[in-house]
Length: 199
Image (tube, rainbow, N blue to C red):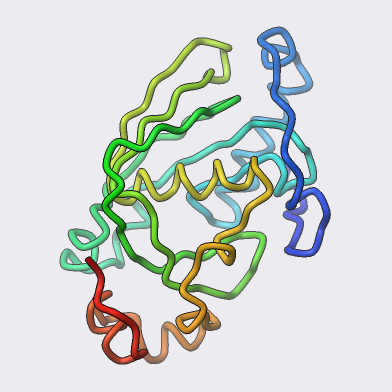
């Protein structure tokens, strides 16, 4: 079932989501919600979806970066993003620890801000602990694009959107990005937009 993805301006996107205990996480209702989140994310398509984005103020997220999403991205851009496929996974009550606070700059979009992108700094590497969909403890160490997705989705659980972190000068409609900027590196984007070069 495809759920409605709420857009910026909905109060739930600016609230601190509540934690889920293990029994609730294993419940039929939450298991059904996880399946619907997966179907909604894949239908969008997107690489991550947090429960507040479908109107549920719960500390629950799903991520997946499918190999098919990478097929039309050049090897140079994949290397620049440090991007590889990520299997489907669910994390409840995630706790993020920064492993490498070197800023990584790249364009981000969001299913709750449909049709826009902006250069957004994120930490280079993070560790995330939490529970999977079976209420088992999990620890994930991620770098590059994987780390970016985790930071983006965990922000949703704390009432934050990427526009709170973005370089405002780079904010643009996705159509303009595809028309003018898609083949450019982050360094080229920064130079042409009059922004400081990435670290």
